[in-house]
Image (tube, rainbow, N blue to C red):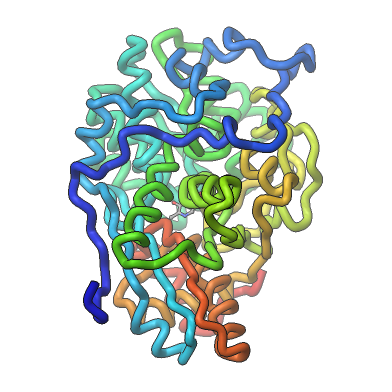
Length: 437
Ligand SMILES: *Cc1c(COP(=O)(O)O)cnc(C)c1O
């Protein structure tokens, strides 16, 4: 390959045909989810009121490869395969001997990796005869991804959006509405859980945990409705693994051996799982020794400061008990800009990988994250999502270290999304008024 190649764009025929299920390769099995009432391992039927069977099967599957339905791959063609770039200009600005690559998920219909799971979730619901999806959203990335996917398969979509972002960041609400969704600020007075939360926490800015309670209640009340979750659960992590599979092929096309480091931001854990699990497989099979680094926000440091225990995904305690690194289901993080990272827990599969020593984690303040995001914007010409900046900052730290050590290593960054709708956060940073939570 020529010396100055800057990106590898695979042909549409190379969209992966299967999702990769890391459960088949874990050295020890991950702890099962528990029924919140009995504390017994969850039975598939326990989830049937809120999820379609196709997704419940994936949630519990131990098969290594799960075929991607043709109808889903057809929709993936709109933006996949996503590009892998060599960050030559960032390398030059850092004067690092490291070779830095980034996998960019920002060119999807809503500008993030979220559509990779929203589309199959809508598909399996359609297949099961459901007509309506309910969900929660923080900054609006997941809500807009599901709104798009629901519309694609002819389903209605009701989104509960954390009140602070509903009011403070209207553009993704408008995006959801443009795709045909109904958006309600949470906590709302339309559900029992919402009314209870308003009573317990008057004037609350809302949280993902609260919005999840409302969306789950809505789905449980309506036999034609399902609940959809944009992160955390096994089937969501599974759907995202097309990212890492493509990246492995693209690194091959760059004639690059397996990377030394892989950085991805971690909120609920789905983009991290998506890019990292296929690389962890390479490590487990003895083909690589890539150090996987989860980059979490200092404001919600579930891996680096949470406890590994069973906890609920929501505040009202309606979701199954998941064994995960958690800060506690009623933890309300400070209102940092990276809304997609403000979740109290970490995906059970990512938690199990961390507990098994298959990945490490660091926590970064948002000023360091945005400093890296501005550098990335000015060199690579892409303004990254607030969340993605945490991964970029982790990689920048490492690339500076590589400069000191004279190390010609290979670093891969998962850039989970575009920051075009996060520009007020950039303005806050540039004005010097950003809190360093
Ligand atoms: C939602 C989101 C995240 C955080 O969610 P994960 O499940 O941890 O991936 C990160 N980046 C972007 C762009 C997002 O939209």
